[in-house]
Length: 252
Image (cartoon, rainbow, N blue to C red; front, side):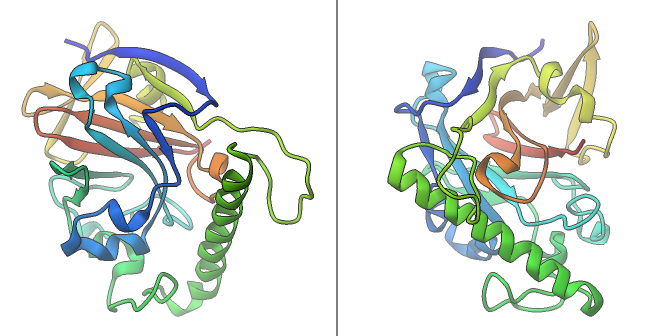
């Protein structure tokens, strides 16, 4: 059976279920604190907005710093496992609403070979390091600028540091709930699912499942809504029995 939730589009007003710019120090399990070097947290979503029985379960929309080019995980295949592959990564949501990454740091190109000391000090081939460094620093700068403007105005404004005062309010999320096919179908052929997950088609509708339990489409948003470099469509899926959160990323 297809897993379908109520559909919301173009969400540009906050409510009790949405927490923008959540504190990244409170998103990941303690033993994986290194994850803060690989993601920017966009908005936390209390799933009670979509299903009253899930109230209090909070998932976090994340934008990864990678990829600079290609797909995230594309160059680290020997460190993939059944829960991650190129352009697909997964977490388990803990009882206190933190993410446990279901692989290790070597999934990320910036996590190879060194033990980073801060968000910018990560392993990259020397010839690419300066470009990647600039890419990451810009993403953080633009994100923090929009975060600051939110604190000032209560809105997500589509501005960059050199834009002046003019701004247009952006959507916190472009899509939430609804059919998986309307949000994921165009991207399914880009990269192979991790081995733990299966995609089957029922009446021309994709069903992604883990242990025969279907994932629900939770939300999607472009990275640029938050000023970040990154995907044109960040896709967050959730399977409530295993409490696995599955991400993939679409590029135009």
